[in-house]
Each structure stands twice: as structure tokens, then as C-alpha cells.
Image (cartoon, rainbow, N blue to C red; front, side, top):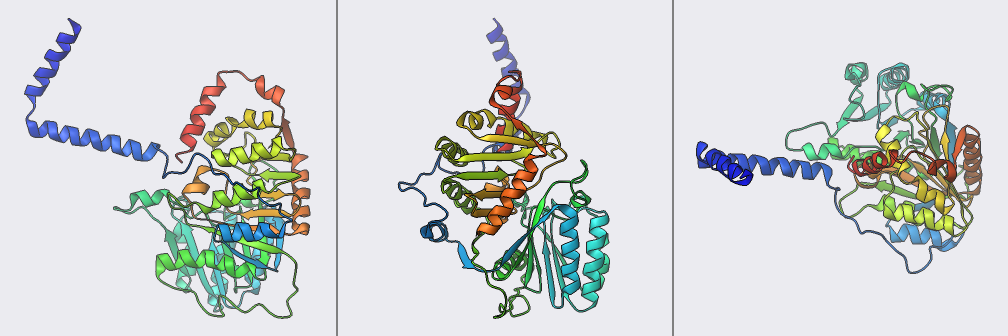
Length: 444
């Protein structure tokens, strides 16, 4: 009886509208399903896991650098220095001093730019240097600077500085807006560079002394590493403006009298496509090289299968695996819940997990066997793996490795360890929320 009534109502509805109205309705319904599918189905494709028949060499093995650079088609080199800058005050002081010493060019690319004290100091100094004849170029990400009042940059433009925006919302290019410029590439005169996790906003001021001051690191680079960082800026700049940055002004010869070092590096500059994602392979292979220690600090942990399996495998094989992640002071509750979905698997494998307590920990680095450090802009999440422009360095250097281990141990002093017993004791009602969070977290 009920089914016949439904059929009767459908028949009446069919007769009420003409064929072309029904056609438009079907087209609209299909369009809505297509948009939902595009938004919530995984971007691109990747194999369920990647494997290597031969063990990855340890980071101390000479074939490690060659394997990772040739195998992933990455640039490698030797020499230069990497100086960690701990928290915002150290970064700002060093950055402004480098600006003061600039005499030919300043190229500036960071993901976030917000109004405030930090922004004013940077813009004032860039404007001053432009008026002195230094060529200043600023690359803003359209999403990362969405709250920034660009009128603040007008004095710089009036002085002759160049400002461009990466992938603003444009009709016909809406799907491109999802892919952001998340790189950190600041280069002064082609000889000094900065990369890491920081950007231009007042949350990167101070020394992580309260919840308004983020805990984060930046790195000052010199020597052969700097031209590769300049390339991270140049390829995006040329794509937006058509201007190629060439010559000694941007790539000066490295002085023969410059201090040398035994530091070796591999440079990763990612422009992801659906089937080629070099960055996650670089990170996974590095993790598989661990023999004794693997320390990770990251603000967002949403691993794919191969990253999660690699971390768990190392822990099960006796590697001391430790991770420092944020606690409730996090700028993305969804990412925090999503990361919790993986805690039990990691804890069961023997991974030690710590949550940083005083403020949001936005630090991004990894150190393997006290020798191999990974620094730069990437997070351990879906966006960095598959969507965003990123840049990173793998650095083989015992001194930097030791410094990173000390930084890690210092941060543990301000963190709370998550034990397996404590984690299992949580209410079961939180599990569905964490499962849903990691599903949605893979889409954004």
C-alpha cells in the first residue's frame, strides 16, 4: 500500500514538469555529486604502499646520499653552514640584521603574512632597502595572506619593490586554489638564506613564553645551500611574473676563501602532481635508514600508509623512535583529533610520544642516528605530501645532528609523555570522532 502511494506521487510529479525541466534537474543533481566527489575523494592516486627489496643504507653509508639523490632525482652538494634559530625573537633579530647588510637583492617567500608588529618591522626595512637601490621581491600566498591588508605594502611598491600573489581566486582556475605555496625561501644577495617553519605574523615573536608565542625554529643558511634556496623562490616567481632571475646578483660565485665544511646536503623542491610526489618518498626513505635513533617534531601528523609503516617498522626493530607533537594549543582541532587516531598503533610498536605543553609547537625537523637532519617547510600531513609547494633539505652533519638532539631533549622537558596505558584508558566514544577526523583530514 505504501509503495503504491509512492509510485502514484512520483507519477504525478513526472506529469507536473516538462521533459526539459527534468533534464535540467538531472544535470544539476549530477553536477552536485561531481563537486562533492571532487572535494571529498582523495586527491590523485598512490599505491597502498611502497617497498624496497634491498635494505635502505644507513645514513653513515656513502651510498645513502647517492641512493636518495639519484633515485629521487634530487640535487646534492657539499659545504656551507646551517644555523638553527630558536623561536621568533632569534629569527627576527637575525633576519633584520641580514636585511641591513643587503646591497643587491632581497627575495622573500613565506606562506603566512599577517598584519602586526612583525609585519611592520619587515615592511619598513624592505622599503628602506628598496629606496637604497636593493631590488626587493615579495611573494605572497593568496590563502596564507588572506587576512593581510595589502595596503601596508604600498610604500614598498611606491619605492619600486615588486609584490606578487600566488594563486588568487580566479574563475576558471578554482581547482588550482587548493594547491598553495607553503615554501619558506628568503634569500639576501644570493649569499644568505632562511628556511624553516616561521613566517610573518606576531605569533612568531617572543620566545615561546606564553600561548600567544608559538614554539618554532628557522634556519640561517650560507654557502652552496643558498643558490638552491634561491631556486625555490625563482621557479615560482618566474611562473607568476615571467621574470627570470639570473646572473651574479642572484647566484654569485662562492668565495674561494669562504670557510668550508664537511656538511653534505640533498635539496627537495616539490611541485606535486597526482602521480609524482617526491617529498613523501624522500622522508620515508630517510626514516628507513634509521638504525639507532629517530626523533621527529612536527605540528601536524596525518601519515599515509608508507610513512606510518616505516615509523612502526623502525620502532619494532629496536630504533629509539620519539615524537613531539602539539597538545591542545593547536591551530587545527581537526588535525589534532586526526593525529590521535594513530597514537595507539605507534605506542604499541614502542614509539614514545610527547605532547608539548606551554604553547603551540610548530617546530618541523627530523634527526636520524644523530647525523641526518631534515629541515624546511613540510609538515607530515596530506597537504604537504600531495598538494602544496614545499622545500626541504636533508643535511648530513654530525654537529647539526647533535644540535637537533639537544633541541629535542630541551623540548621534552616542556612536554608530557603519552603512555599506552593512559591512552587505552580514554573513553571509547572519542574513537569515532578521531576516525572521522583522519578521514576528513586527508581531504584538506
